[in-house]
Length: 297
Image (cartoon, rainbow, N blue to C red; front, side):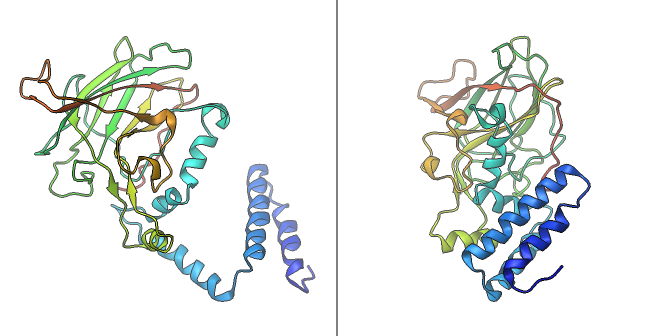
């Protein structure tokens, strides 16, 4: 190794990276060094900027706690999460997919709810929302006995593991699809909400004059043997931040109109209007079901 100028650094590092025995790790590290070194040279990164960058990386980890994941939030705000999702689904990124972002607030072991039941477990003011979901394979055939995990923010924009005022597992529940691949339940209509802005992500958004809002959405995680786990978010087209999602998660395939009804609900006498309905079809792709790790505790 004979380094005289900055031109010699990248070839020296790549020579070492190319000795990595594992072929996939070798491919990743060679590409990482090539692009990372290229980026540093392209922007002519200063020593002060380098020190600031390492401090930011450290702070991303320091700000991640049992109820907050700054790194996941940053990945979304840079479009990385959306890119990885779309690249790895929809026939390798060539077709539309109902796969979407996991987000930081998914919990394992949500309680099971019978179809037609409610996931509202504490006093949660808001317009009633009745959801009917349909789970099918690529050919449009119903997927029977799929486990469907649902979670959402409240009408004040907080998930229950952020908000001590909500009951445990409020606005969460697991359902099982019937012989027609259907599941259905009652909840309250969610709203969009801002990301926390008191950390690294907030400073970036402020510097770029970007708002911190996500449009209203419903989270779904569907598992069934023989299929890849489907992680999805269904976005409300009427939300004022639909076109400017801070996490770049909105796709055409995961967008829907939440239909407003003024008349009393036909089967729930306590709902006299207004109320909303959502009827959406989820498409599973073949594969091996592997559950993600919850991003926070």
